[in-house]
Length: 324
Image (cartoon, rainbow, N blue to C red; front, side, top):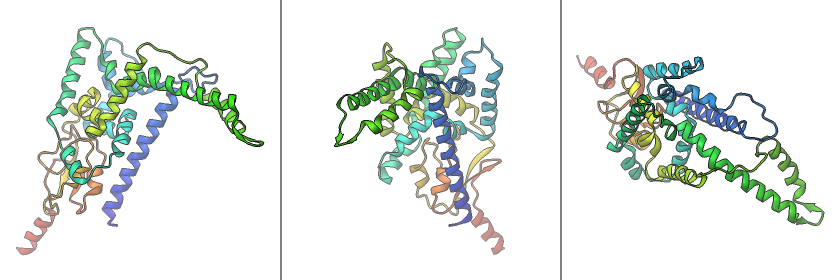
């Protein structure tokens, strides 16, 4: 394997590890906010909201020192583009995982992989929420990814999980299935004690509109079947904000036209619809900096680098120099 491609794939795996770590951290902190007997971590899941610049902007009337972290996210985005969506966002990880379950052929992925005008909708949503905040009406919690994900987990997903788990273990306990002296309860009861102590809620939570919120959550996830990372491309107002801030980053995509054969495999593997196949058409505001395009390019024509975005015909230039 060429050295460049090997390095690129290490970056892709590093990004996947980062996504997994932040997703698991979000779930862990969420569970620590539920009402089970032992809460091991004093910091609740709201620690993630401190990284959210959209929450900071829409709560401008309440400035907390810890919110400086969201300012740091914007500074890094200004330099390195919309990396947050591809490396840290736990809700984006869920959409990415759901999208990966698709088994589309290359032709279908090409048809759905490029930029679509509908991806501008998220910017209109962002303007609506910012205008509402200035008018004193803060509605961003409805579609901010951290808020939406947390609300769905707290109001619909976790209560359903809690109820289902209690029902299954309760049925096993009451019926005590097994073969002879080998009873299933010998396994399930110790496991149930661990779940009761560290995961399950003390009392079954019930919330108004839980069914509607759960339905919205499932719908948003299923939309990834229609379009890869539909939420991130079309709806997410935080993604829109980061896209505007990182519209002209220092770290840019570069393409060597002398090596590119226009196979567009990069487009088929682009989760953001950023058009990595066209140098002048590449959209950094839609790019998640996942490095998929560089990783899958069979001719190593794509790379990321600092400085002015350019089309680098390196092979052609060297040939012309030699000819002279």
